[in-house]
Every structure is written in structure tokens, then in C-alpha cells.
Length: 326
Ligand SMILES: NC(=O)c1ccc[n+]([C@@H]2O[C@H](COP(=O)([O-])OP(=O)(O)OC[C@H]3O[C@@H](n4cnc5c(N)ncnc54)[C@H](O)[C@@H]3O)[C@@H](O)[C@H]2O)c1
Image (cartoon, rainbow, N blue to C red):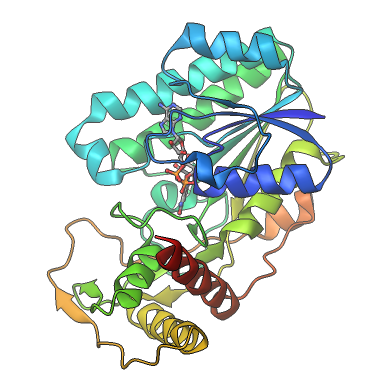
């Protein structure tokens, strides 16, 4: 099966590309490389450097590639940028999504899988939130993920697509961009590998549900290609993808510090890594957010397989290799 992955040169998208290729599928990628990189893609994968806001360019890629299914990962994904520039956020996350859905419908694609977010839809929750939790997005980014699911439902009903929204919790792993404000694991890994202290916002007692990128990619591969009785034409299926396990930033930093120390020792550098610094709390940061992925277990047969300790060790090793190669 040929699958078009938008945002395929990004963190999660490139793991999806790897998963699809490993399962024997053909893949093409749309990415404007605004935060993604060609280096994340294996050689030979067709990369169309296109902005999804450009409807004509998106349509041309679909005409050329004729995919059977689409995996939509491309997005403006900074919450703070969405607050500063709500118009830009809506252009990429709403108009861009509509361009992709429109082209998918016109080309007769059968399935569309969309990267949604449990964090921004459910807000502050102290126990794992099921999909039935009322959505209450507060940032423009959260609003566009919520509206995005409504557009999926519309295109499913109107054009007969089978659509799946995967509501990720906090995804981490190799290839995550450490330069933004999200991706705490990537940011802390990079700081500690450079011998610098990580800065924790507020008291660090902010609980999140960390799920490993390649596990998330596997959920996408199943949603795109699996023989799934509940994923039928004209339907939207919304599924949480996370572990349901809460970890606060203080615990997370301790885990990362241990993993980075082990990694550095393996590379022949033993160092005492600095303790974290504490900075001001970030306004609007949720105290606690975690998702219940039981439904994804039923519909996709998916469950996370990589523990946080194991995933952080692999991530620290990847960032150490990156630092070595410059
Ligand atoms: N990382 C997380 O914890 C998380 C959580 C919930 C949802 N998500 C969603 O998962 C998806 C992938 O996120 P990620 O963490 O891999 O981020 P990422 O920034 O690594 O990936 C996004 C990709 O989309 C591309 N892109 C951005 N704007 C584009 C445009 N206008 N046209 C074409 N390509 C464009 C970027 O270059 C990048 O390669 C996003 O939709 C994001 O909102 C991520």
C-alpha cells in the first residue's frame, strides 16, 4: 500500500515512515522542513518540500503519488506561538489540514490518520482521561486540534473516508527537536550532555504521560494499514495514545540525568552532572495530564511496549551520538 506522510521529516513522522517501510509499504513525504530534516528520512523516500497551506502544491503531490492512505503529522505545534500568532496557527493547522483532506478525498484515498493531542483537549486531569472526557481546549493550538477532528468527521461523512484521530500524550524519543519549548526530554538530554544544568519551571511537580515515539509510530502504522473492523468508511475513530502513567518533571530529570551519566560513561567520559536549577513557573502550564489508552488496545490491538527508563536510555544514547557527529 502507498502511504503519504505529511510532516514525515519530523520527529514522529519519520518514525512512522520507518515503521511503514519495515512493514513493506511504499511511502512518500510532504514536509516544508520548517522543523523537520531530510536527515530523519532513509535514502530513497520521495520528499516533496511543500507547504501544506499551498493547496495547489498539495493537490499536485497527491496527483503524482496517488496514495491509498494519508498520515497527517504536519502541524504548527508550538502552543506559545499559537497564542502569539493565532492566524498562522490556524493557517497551518486548519487550512493545511483541509487542503490535505480535500486532496485525499479527490484522489480516492481510503484512510486518513490525524495527529491529535490528548494534552490540549482534556486539560488538567489527575487520572488517565478516556476519550469521553469533554474537550476544553484553551490555546489556539488546542482549538485547531479539536476543530481538526471535526473536519475529519465532516470529510468522513461527506466523502466516505475512514478517519482516525490519534490523541497523543507527551511523545519523546530520538529525533525530537530540542530547540523548541516542547520536548522536555530532548531539551534536558541536550543540556546535560553539554555539561549544563537543566532548568525546571516552577516546583517541577507537573505530571505528564510520556510515551515513546516509535511506540506512537506503531499505533499510526496499525491505524493506517490494519484490518480494523471499527475503522470503516464514513467514520471518525478518536483514540488516546499514551501510557496512563504519570511522571513529574523532577522525577523525569532524575531519570534523564542517570541515563546521560551512563551514556557518557559508555563513551568514555565520566562526569558529575549538575543538579537542576529552578526557574519561574510557566503561566498556563497544566498541573497534571495523562490519557487512558484502553480503547486503542481494543480497536488497534495497541499498547505501549517501551518503558520510560528504557526509552530515556535510548534517547540519551541517540543525542550523545548526534553530539559526537556534530
Ligand atoms: N510531540 C508531542 O508530544 C505531540 C503531542 C501531541 C500531538 N503532537 C502532534 O504530532 C505531530 C508531529 O509532531 P512532532 O512532535 O513530530 O513535531 P515535528 O515538528 O518534529 O514534526 C512536524 C513536521 O511537520 C512539518 N511541517 C510543519 N509545518 C508544515 C507546513 N506548513 N507544511 C509542511 N510541513 C510542515 C515540520 O517541518 C516537521 O517535519 C504534530 O501534528 C503535533 O501537533 C505531538
